Length: 153
Image (cartoon, rainbow, N blue to C red; front, side, top):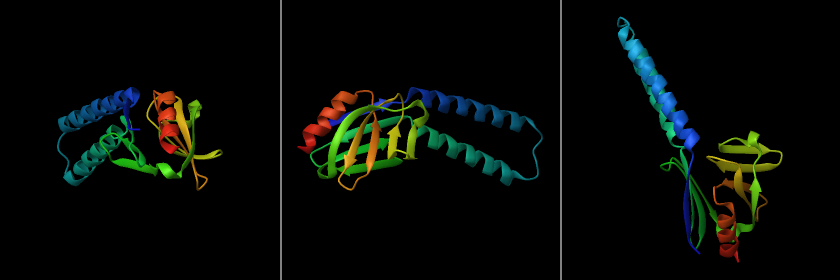
């Protein structure tokens, strides 16, 4: 059974826009100052700002794809991707993440698991044959859970 869904992280997009506005304001303010002798520092600051925006933008959405063989996840435009062999998945269940689990990619020691999330608290927890646990955030948890369960039978 095939499945493809993209969840948008609206808060992350708002944060990215706010940081872009802040960085633009900093650049405009800095260009109003008399030019300094060290233009290398200006280039470094601009490069760091661009890198921060690039990373923030890459966590604006989470796409989950299930095809005949894999469960795949992809953040944003694909800077981070992960795939799970469906034959390795032994269970899937709908769960609620605690607020302090946060968003993005998170590793937790207790309980030991990895979390991939861009918005909200709903997720599907999968357990693999090797004992590892993963939570995949989604805004349609029941549909994702049912698709995974149907695909691993």
